[in-house]
Image (cartoon, rainbow over all chains, first blue to last red; front, side, top):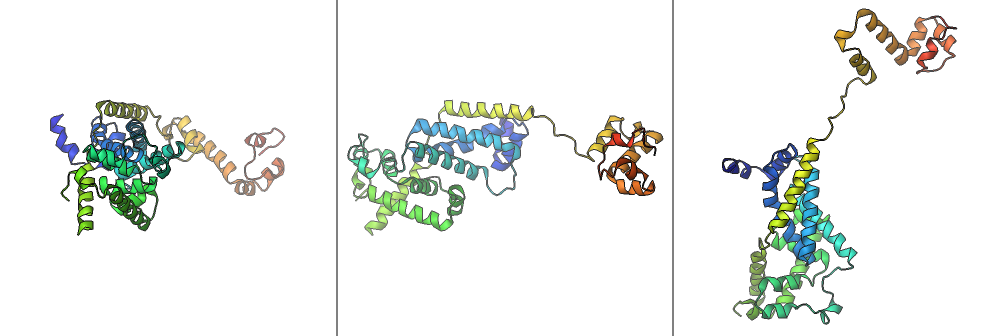
Length: 195
Length: 121
């Protein structure tokens, strides 16, 4: 199949969806390689729970496969945007069922037995420190910040995913980033940055 | 300048978080298994029903298509169609006899009533 790899690489996600619906055996593999990391990354950072994130990522991909039969290649949303929206909604549902908005509420922070922001930083684990800081944000802010600054999506794309106006997205990402900065400020040494 | 530097360092931290999530092989395998299951379902989906002229197309098909329709049969089918679809026209052509005998049953009279022995068209 190595001869086919360049062919798949040149195809858009939408074109691969159509191929998948028509029974192409390689389209699913390529779509999985492209999209599953993004779904898993988004869910992991929003939920803060790897096992739940894997469940949600698998469920979202299953819905994507089912949507392939009716997929319009020139439709309003690219498969990735559509997938992010499903992941965002599944995460929201999961957090609401567990009664969580921020993964770490202000009132629980003092009694939280997990390593907090400062402890993670002292351990020199920058990614874990970022995750701990993200966990402090309200759910919608967290989703917006993750989609904008980690997944690298544009504000209009995020607006479509979160079913918000573009200005609302800009406000969420700005507030979320300020909150992250506040949580991480003063810890530059632990993060390995020069003062 | 300190604020700008903080922001720059946060941007770097966020940037380094991109693509940092590793997908376990077990998860990929489950996702691909789901894909194979859905593709199997798509292949097994029943064909869409034929669309055409509705019941007239079905009659035609039942009689073996147009070649199966002899002149007499064709006239009979056409007459039946005309009587059901345009009863007023047919009634008019009959001099009002059909309406009289069927009791003015309306646009879609029961076919069997047209064949009652008491009435003779």
